[in-house]
Every structure is written in C-alpha cells, then in structure tokens.
Amino acid sequence: MSETTLFIHDLEAAVSPARSGPLRGKSLGDLEVHSPASVAISGDRILAVGKPEDVLREHPPGPECVSVDGRGKVAMPGLVDCHTHACFLGDRAREFELRSAGASYEELHAAGGGILSTVSATREGSEDELAAVAERHFGWMLEHGTMTAEAKSGYGLDRDTEMKMLRAIARAAENTPLDVSPTFLAHTPDREFEDAGAYTEYVINEILPEAAKHARAADIFLERGSFEVPEARRYFEAAREYGLALRMHGDQFTERGAIPLAVEVGAKSVDHLEATGDEGAKTLAKSDVAAVLLPACALFLDLPLPPARTLVEEGAIVALATDFNPGSSFCESLPLVMSLACMRLKMSPAESLSACTANAAHVLGMSGEVGRISPGYRADILVLDAPDWRYVAYHLGGDRFAARVKSGELL
Image: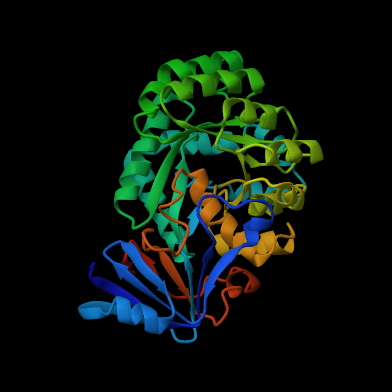
C-alpha cells in the first residue's frame, strides 16, 4: 500500500468534473461532489477522495505526513490555462489608453502597433530577460490557482527571436512549480516579406524544424491581415510532419474558414470564436475540435461574445482560458475568466469549472493526468477558503485559496 504523504482532511466538499476525458453537451456541468470529504495523496499522485472516515481508515497518515485542515473549506482541481502568451517584453499601456479613446485593435495593428510593437520589444531583449519575465508571469498565474499552463511563442516572427522565446519558456518552466506546455505560434507575417505566402514558406523551412524540438503544439492566427486558409493549411501540413498538435486562433474578428479547416486537419482546438455564427458553432460541435473561449479578451477589446450557449448545447468540447498577453487580454486569472463565463457567456459555475480543468487539460493532451481530483491523477489541488466551491466564480475573481497543492507538495 502506498504511503500517505499529504492528507487534506474534513473538507466541506471535494468537487471535480465527473468521469474521464472531455465533457460535452449536457455533461459539461456534471460534477462529482464528495461532501464532506478528505483527500489522501502519495508523492505526486492522488490516492483517494471520499468520506473522511473511509479515507482515514484506508489511507491513514503516517508520522511524516503533512496535514491540511479543510474544515469550512472546499477542494477543487488545480486550474489549467490552455491559451496564454506569457513570454514577451515591453507593454502596451499606451495602446490601452488609445483604445479607451476609441481606436480599434485592427487600426492599431495596421499602424504598426499591436502585435508588431511587442515584436519590436521582444526582438531587442535578451533570452535572460525573456526567461525572467516568463517566470514572473507564471508566478502570477500560480497565485490565481493555475497549475498547468500553455505558453506560446509568436512575438519574434524571425527565426532567432522565436527560438529565443521557446528557450526562455523552457528555462522559466524549470524555475516554477507550474507545468508548462510550449506552443510555437505563427502569429502574423513579418512585414519584411512580400506576402503571407512567402512568409509561411520561411516559417516552414527556417523556423519550424528547430521550433518543433522545443514545442508540443503548433498554432497559427487565421484572420484578416494575418494568415488565410491556404497559408494555414500549408503550415498545418508541415507541423503535422513533426508530430506537433495543431491549434488555431480563429474567428476573432471575422469568419474566414477557420472552423472548416480545423475540422479538415484534425486540429486540437480553435480559440477565440467571437465572430463565429450559428453554422460555424454547429459544425464545430459535430467534431472533436475543442472550442477555446477567451472572455477576458472579448471584454478587453469590447468584441462580440462567442456563442458559448450554442456551442455547449450543440455538444462541442468547450474550454476556457485567459489569453494572457500584453495587448488584448492582460489577465492571468482563471477565476476571473470563470466569473465572466458565468455572467457574460451564460455558462453555469459547474460548466465553467469543467471548461478550465478537465476540458482545458484535454486541449493540452493531458487528459487522465490533470484537471480532476481522482485516484491516479496528479495531486494538483486548490483548497478554496470558502464553504461552497461556487465561490470561485461567484466571488468576482474568486482566488481566495487557503492552500495550494502542486504535484503533492504544499506550496
């Protein structure tokens, strides 16, 4: 029998998405609730969760076991942020001011601001500076309950800077308790190239072979002014050859064929979807491509809201993420995203919890590993300093944690 090394006892409740794998349709809100509950942990794995007397009898804590008093509190899985741009230099505070006065995101981008201003700052900085900033951002995420996070490149555009970003992400990951999943992002064409097609060939031939050694997924921004379907398809075909999972920024401002292409190539997800209509939502729902919704970005840019209810009710795999980045969602808080999902996207607290735990883990290829409080899963657990798990969304930005356990270690 495995020795219990950490024991969370006498909780008001332990709450977790039900079953295994991604949850969809009416099942998205299905939770397994143990009330009251205790959780036994051995090393970095969960041994048992259930009635306090049962867990205590079957997995008694030894003399060296660390105990966490759960009285008056609830446990939930560590949060999973499946879409972030956590590695960059500079800021866009001036643009934020201009946008508050009426300038649109696309107007700023066309004038050399937006992504391109962050590209300039990131190119000028060192790998050491990038690693330090990424580590700082991962620390912010951890404070807000995120225990697994994706981190994209994409603010380099040239080979040297993209590789500098991916190396910095890897270095920062070594110095944080967070599990970090790196993604190589083709964000927007470098203006030094004649057109998007020529730049795509540069990415495929000059950057992708090396980037694939450092990334788990390949992402591309399919949008007016960035890449269109032909370039995205070509990029995906090349990325698949390197064994990378396929991700896509799509339908943020316009519908330009992102969803049909994602279904065609078997992408893991399409992220954003603020411009998606009913037909696109229904097409996505009939597939195994996840819909990653980013309500903090929609709030930040004052965009239309993605069709969350249609996606859920039609049976799509729906995940939530922060889209943490310097220009369109300077937000690292998944609890705030859960609050926005409930208030603006009309998702229930239970749906929002599954969307940024089990379903987000699925998007990152980590189903069965993180996103649930269940025997055999990694012991990533948040002890919410509240008597009801719904406080995490009900309390706007409700990241009031009495304890955080990462891979079986009390932080």
